[in-house]
Length: 168
Image 1 (cartoon, one colour):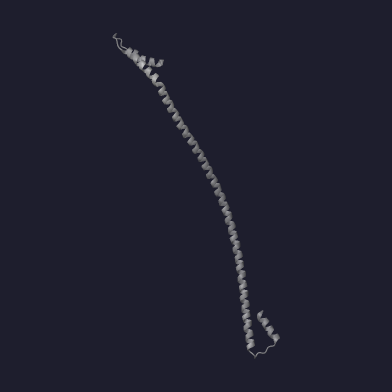
Image 2 (tube, rainbow, N blue to C red):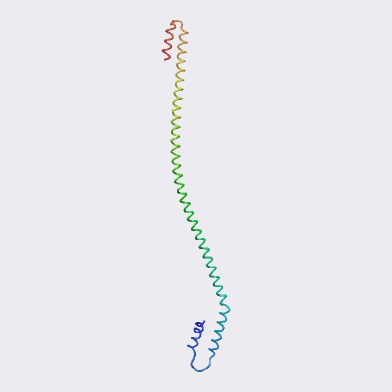
């Protein structure tokens, strides 16, 4: 407070005229100082409270922003962890799918080999059946010819030998 009085009184002393005439500078200065003191007394607490509340609201907003920043950083790290976990899972899934692919390929290959073997066996059996049918047909034809032709007289033992030769 003393500083303010000196600050306001200094210009009065500096600019005071030495002419010897009376001026009203001193009463005006006193009035100004009283007015300034009264304003300070009435408005100081209001201004201090205003700036204090303003400072607190700015601090609260700053704290809220920092909390949001911390939360977003936390979420970012969680998201990055999930991404890394997903990458690991993707690699494991890729390895598993490759193993399953190889197993399925081996199974399909072995199934195809078995199917081919079965087809060959079936084909061989069909050929054997057809061969027997042909042999029967030839034997039947030969027997029919022999029985229909009476000019050829063959005894029974020779006839059986001929049939056995044809069948074999």
